[in-house]
Image (cartoon, rainbow, N blue to C red; front, side, top):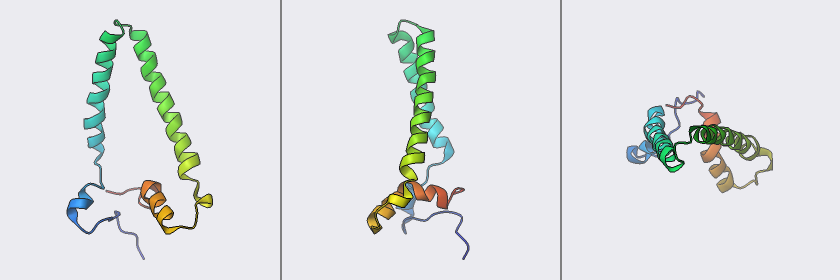
Length: 105
């Protein structure tokens, strides 16, 4: 059996619409939010650019480490998951779908 090109989670198109996030939606949401916070920080911290830049880089580093740790040690905790259909479903929806359909459209 050949895998479908995408995961279909709901029978209705309305609900299925909310299961997909186009790549540009992340940019539309997060770029303005980050720019606003950098702008606000510039004036709130008395135009101290080195501190703002350090905080920005440190934030990216801390987020990357946290995301790696979550992915490596929490989401790949497959062997120790209880044999419970609900737990397995939740684990699959949060992370397994990412591996089952890596090129999901």
